[in-house]
Amino acid sequence: MNVLTSITVLGFLIFFHEMGHFLAAILQGIYVDGFSIGFGPSIIQKKYKDITYSLRAFPLGGFVSFPDEEINNIDPKDPNLLKNRPIIQRVIVISAGVFANLILAYTILIINVTNVGIPLDPEPGILVLATQPEKAASLAGLETGDKILKIDGTSLGIGDQAVSSLVKRIQTSSGESILIQIQRKNSLKDLTLVPQNINGKGTIGAQLQPNIKKETKKIKNINELFNYTNKEFSSLLIKTIQGYKGLITNFSSTAQQLSGPVKIVEIGAQLSEQGGTGILLFAALISINLAVLNSLPLPLLDGGQLVFTLIEGLRGKPVPINIQTAVTQSSFFLLVGLSVLLIIRDTSQLLIVQKLINP
Image (cartoon, rainbow, N blue to C red; front, side, top):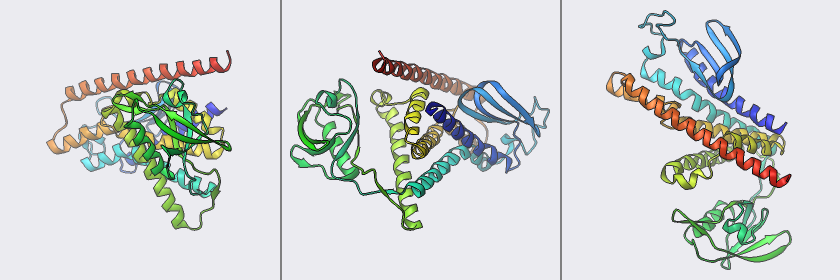
């Protein structure tokens, strides 16, 4: 049921993204002839007012299609064809999906904060969310749920600043011993971390976050609601952008943390176990990721189409079709290849975990 919930959420987010494109075109009077959720063969298909709506076999995306004047017997100079509209109107249609996902994520965060409240101020230290087997944190004896309080005898402080301070020390201390004090349940322990060197930076193989209390407080007024939501939304957006930036600047390290469709569904299933709050958080995170991913300048994505459109605006004529085709095909093989690798990797890891749990 949890897996079904996460797949349903993904489908809704994709639907909302494509609806952004669809409404941006329809409301401007631009011809549209198709609205699809998923790729591949159609499972359900219905034509209404010259627009074919379909649900397809592979729910990993979707598309809004625009009529070809030759196939649909339309005057090539018809002003309601997308290609004949001013650049600014086409930019609106192309960008609408990204903005739809950002607006949806912000709205979800507003709903979540309104219902759940605002977390109390973090307590001192850093919470260990998870550790990877055979990595420095696990080898040192660090466990999920531990709270790191001190490093080399100095208190870490609280909040994001504490996490940043520890991460910076780890990254600059590969191969060196770091003495940390942790709290495990009601007892204090001293452990020695020896960060491992990966691409010139120290790493310990652990997920860390500020030591935030589970309790929350109700919002006092609308200003507090929007101030907190703005902060959370900005933080999630910036971290997502930094994550994709890492694929370019530090691919080998960041790719290890990259999640494919299988892993995303697994994460969604885990979060959905927390009830409505977990589902809302999952939806907001993935909606922001969809927005950032589609902004990348790859031809199969909105960002790539935007680049072609802006170049056309500067040149005064479209990019030659042979160049568009070559770049698009390269982008297709890159995205499909990466998706297949991630699916294989995440599925194999999931099977290994299940075997360990149920030998």
